[in-house]
Image 1 (cartoon, rainbow, N blue to C red):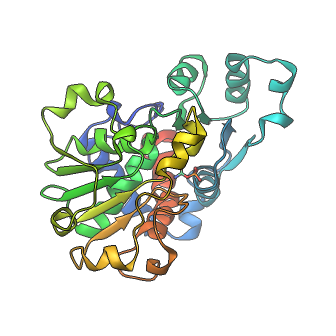
Image 2 (cartoon, rainbow, N blue to C red):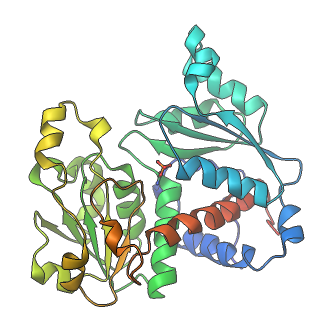
Length: 312
Ligand code: CP
């Protein structure tokens, strides 16, 4: 097995990691699932994950907590900042510093771009970016690419559609950065007001096969091996009237599915609102809940690699 490049490192941006690092992590994710409960429960015995979420979360927080418990560690954290001393005026820097005193690794979600990078400079312990503004969500991209591997047995050569809110969706950026390590066709589908931020991908766009669309045409749907659907990020719109103009624009349902390749895999970082109909949840193409479950396994492997040079 390759060297562990995750040991004691902060996970701020997916761009800090190479395709070899992804391969190492994905192998570790496969291997951790073969351990017995007892073997797995020894990995992080006596170690603590500390977290703070300045924004709502279901999957990221709970999958990390579940992952840490499954490897024998514990979690403590703040999921409601109204109950913390931030309400007394404590600074972000002092808050992060304090959490790092009580933990072995610190998980943060924050509405500002750059918040995790800044935290990693303050924290005494490695920081994991659990979502920073519209910037990045690196562990989501790791599990997204892992899911594509599990479904398709490869990433190279695939046509991948990324659909929805490409302007504000942080998972979109981390995924595109991750996919820039592979030979893929990327089809970006969004209304014009939610197009990809070119300034965030300018250095990789020329080396990627990237195509822009505003509609899910028959020709496009017949091409895609993977559809990565995203929620329109209502909370990031400066003007809610603008959100209402494009709310519900793309809806993946049985009628759309009939126009796709029969083996298309549909992924979504979740939560969904109205962009994927629940009527397709039980089809073989709907992978989004399996993807969420891989979140626990991949984060267990990631925490193990971050906490131990030889994880298990
Ligand atoms: N995918 C994701 O980040 O989900 P949560 O917002 O529920 O954590």
